[in-house]
Length: 81
Image (cartoon, rainbow, N blue to C red; front, side, top):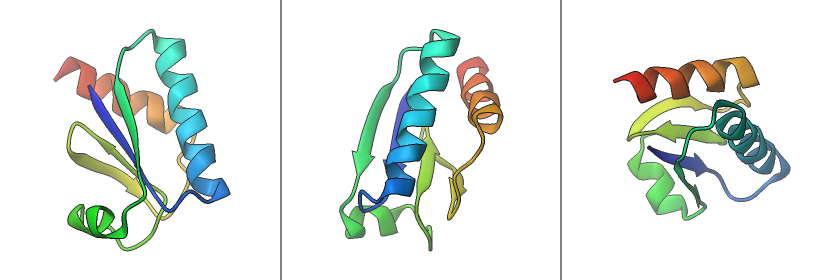
């Protein structure tokens, strides 16, 4: 599973990264988690606001910090597909 955290490195981006890593640990799911801070690369995903969460190439959320429950649901959906 590939997970990308999109954002310039602000506290909101770090919070999203922390929540995502906690969910992965809770579920026991191995994933390649990378932070993307290059604005050109962020724009390639077509989001207008950060932070953004991309799982397996699919933008799941942008412009807000999703709850742990939301992240868990998205990880489980991608794990089963």
